[in-house]
Amino acid sequence: MSGVLKYVSSRVASSIFTLWAISIVVFVVLQQLVPGNVADIMDGSGDATPAQVHAEEVKLGLTRPILDQYGTWLGHALTGNLGVAPLSGQSISQVIAQQAPISFELAFLGLLIAIVLGVPVGILSAIHRSSAGTDVLIRLPFLLVYATPVFVSGALLLLASAHYFTALYSVTYVSLGSSLIGNLKVMALPSITIGLTEAGLLAQMSRAAMLEVLSQPYIVTARASGLRPVRLYGLYALKAAALPILSLIGFLYGLLIGGVIVVEQVFSLPGMGRGLLQSITNREFGELEAQVLIIAIAFIGGNLLVDLISPLFDRRLVSA
Amino acid sequence: MLSGVVDAGPSTRRNRGGAWSRWVTAGTRNLGLIGVFGFGIVLIFCIAAVIGPVAVGSSVDRIAAPPFLRPGGAGFLLGTDELGRSELARVIVAARIAIVAAFGSVVCGLVLGVAMGVIAAYVGGVVDQVLGRLMDFIFGFPSYVLPILIAVVLGPGLWVACLSIGLTFSPQFGRISRTATLNIRHRAYVSVAKLSGRSPQWIIFRHILPNIVGPLAVMVGLSLANAEGSYAVLAYLGYGVAPPAPDYGSMLSDAQVFMLNDSWAVLFPCIALVLLVLGFVFIGDWLRERFDPRGEIRFGRGVSGQ
Image (tube, rainbow over all chains, first blue to last red; front, top):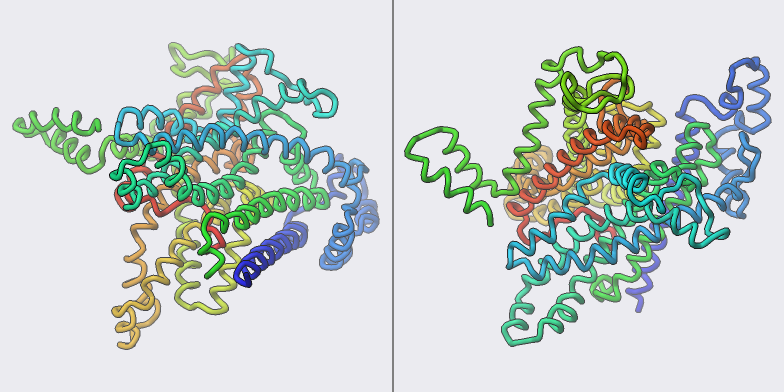
């Protein structure tokens, strides 16, 4: 039991440490090193006097020592107050609350498509490896999809939708709250874009994981002793391959979040990835910090979840 | 499967003694179909990268008279882009940036990662802990986020992109070299070298690095395709080389604006990019078959950060 406790606590502690390190690096390092600040951007035309810009900097607290600013920000953030975005005057929490659901929905749908398509194909192509034709036929399309960068498949799907399936072509976002069908229509192409790319990778990876399991002596023994294929693959092999596939999904999750950023750009969805790129352009570090941290929380949290589920498949992970 | 079919042709012609056919025979035998395709595609891009800019010359930036975004035909084989520049010239010249970006990123990741992994395992203790934390930290960023942030700090550019993409890959190389180093650190020949007064550098370069070449080669193969894709994404988002240098990612993002009316210009950067990434995927596949037939090395994070 203490092994389990030790495992869980060490995983949780290391996740929190990484998050904290990311928060300090994004806030302190970026704000110190990036030329220009939001006061310069607010003075877009450049006709403010230096004294006016400086006054604005003082008002926004940009002249205070950086660690002091970080301390204040962290204290507020921990109580849920992320501050106000200087350019728009909107509360950052509100901005995030508008952006985050879009990104999370996209990530969820994309991962769902990737798992539903990728894992069965990978496993089937591993099982049918001996018949070379089937193996190649199953693998080739997925290799092709895997080799296509996410913005390329996104652009091509967008192009195809404009010409051939116009029902899915859309340039305005419809929120989930206002219309479920409208929202799903808007999200369909972006989710398929992400899902397809990730499915290609997942198929590759789960094929490799399954092949390794199938080469184990106990599988050969089980097959030789006449175990029915359903039982052999479905129970014996899949159980052993589940752990590597699970840790692959954890890894995939990071790629998926990166994919969300790009796809939001391709399809002009007002999500957090697009917001992040905008915050960079506008030097809105308060907003950027919040967006990077929420993306990092989603990523590290997902990996933590995978780490915590993994021992259910392999007890040796916690007994060591 | 198909390599046998390919083999049969040249071997019957061997008596004619053509050096080319002998070369092809040896190539298909050693590389297999996947390897031949992979190395073939990448070789074509490498040739374009070396001689392309010279061969194409100034026509890469030359602006033709309207109509812009014209479809392919006589004069402009692949048509022109939105400024009236030849698509063919730009697709060829962009190969240099694509090849440099892929190999540059992987070399950066390899050097950084191997240094971290070997030092962590060889020195151990606090150093191991600190480097482990550092690698966790780098891994804590979802893909593209760290390169984007680095590009914001250092300014966009090819070398910044290589360095930052390499940095995001370094934990992969670090993890492999750390594990491999731990496995051989206490072998007899390492202890003997230590006892006979060899310096740690000598032991690392003479005994440890040669022992981890195989796994590292597999990881290099897996990383090349990823590096190319990552660079293309950065370029697409505007953090690649500065215009007017041709680059598949930025060519696509420029052409996408006009895509609905003139879809012609979108196609060629897409095709070139997918072909190149596919070439790298095939090379990765071939390296894996050769050095890691059991598929033990994977792109991804080990459970519990080991």
